[in-house]
Amino acid sequence: MDEQLLALAEQSAKNDLAFLIKAKEEAKKRMKDDPSPENIKAFERAKSAVESEAARLQAAPVSARVYKTQLDAVAFLKGSGFKVAKSKFNADVKRGKVPRNSEGHFEEGALLGYAAANLTPLSSVEDRAASEAMVNRMSADAELKQFQAQRQKLKLEREQGLLMPRADHERDLAVRAQLFRNEIEGRDRRTAPKLVELVVSRLAALDGVPPEVAGQLRDAAPNLVPEVTEFLLRDSGDLMDAWSSDRAFVVELADEPAGDAA
Image (cartoon, rainbow, N blue to C red; front, side, top):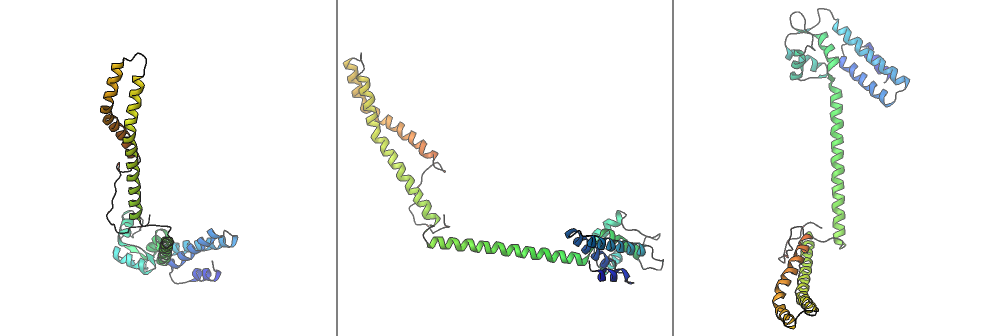
């Protein structure tokens, strides 16, 4: 805290409680940032100055100004450099935080004592609001620059052939999936007759199987192929669907507008 500034605040004959409170808050901030003996001493002096001024105002003679209504009292506090809303002042009056004289009016000293304990100087509020606005602007600018950089990176990768439109990528996946399904189904249809023939021949060759029974098995073999084929296709279909997010592979060959890069 600037010693000359503090001395000026302490020696001021004019009522400037808001100024003293602001000086105390600045001294408090400096003490927190650097708790040196000098800063601690400066804060104690500023705090003492506020307390002394508040006590002096509360002990002011009867000739001090008196405000009959809450609106007048709020206007006085605002004019004295404090941030206060009518609703807050009314609530504090109801809670007994704002002293009144015997006639129910608000005296100047009592109002300033109330302000010292419960209100914030307007200058501090404005400084904080300006600081928050600056932080918000800087944050928004940083996010915008990050978005622009990401967009430029995607554009460069697309030009280099590292990216492709999402629609093209999805269509390529669908085509590959359908080709894979067709290959699996073709294998199942080719495998079914071979599987039936293998099983029938093994059964017919078993010891003790009469020749006429073996002949009947061979004659029935062609009728078993469709059933075995259906079984293999169904089993493979279940396996394929397990790898598909929508439980089916769909091929869309119609032209689509290029979407976002995948």
